[in-house]
Length: 293
Image (cartoon, rainbow, N blue to C red):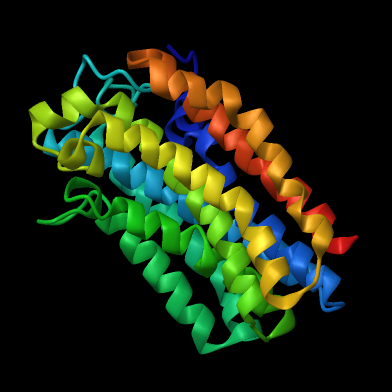
């Protein structure tokens, strides 16, 4: 158990999941750099805004899952601090509001820079981050979490990062943006696969619960494979940036995770959760370098 309040809040922020917020900013900035229109202050603001929204969403999940009774003492995933009694529900609620408020404050500059599109992106990101576990029909409880993650951690995040720097948008950016979204879906898929039995008991209707273990294993495989193939799709469609297809190398690094997902259950999937975040970071680095060669 963490020894200090600082460690408790770091645990609550779920640092291993933050690559899902950081990687789209890396990709969007790399594409803006290649276009000769990188704007570093906007990139930094997008980075901090994305991380704050991700942390705020994690805090909201911690609070609302505890409130709904989904988090129990027998959970297989990493410790949820509200359920574990490390912070009170009121403290977590206050922290959620604080972090989202900081995200909005960071967004003021981005709105000045990019206008109404950034207002829409920012407000919707925060809204759906809360609705993922809050409300009468939370997205994560009715099987719509995968769609939210694909869109907002994919094309919206990459496209928004690119747009706020270049003040333009194009189809290669949107298509490329699908890749980090798919990797983020893979992270969610591992989480849902690990919690399949407990979610079934608690009535949480994730796609894993709705369609079963084999479907979820295949979902994990396909999201990563398709993500790694997307740069090849861009190259075939517009005939540029052939070196970006080096992302296919990520599939080799993903083989151990594929094997574990198809052969194991329970807490060992927490290791796959962490490794999938690292695969996303690796993908982002390879794509960004390849796009600029």
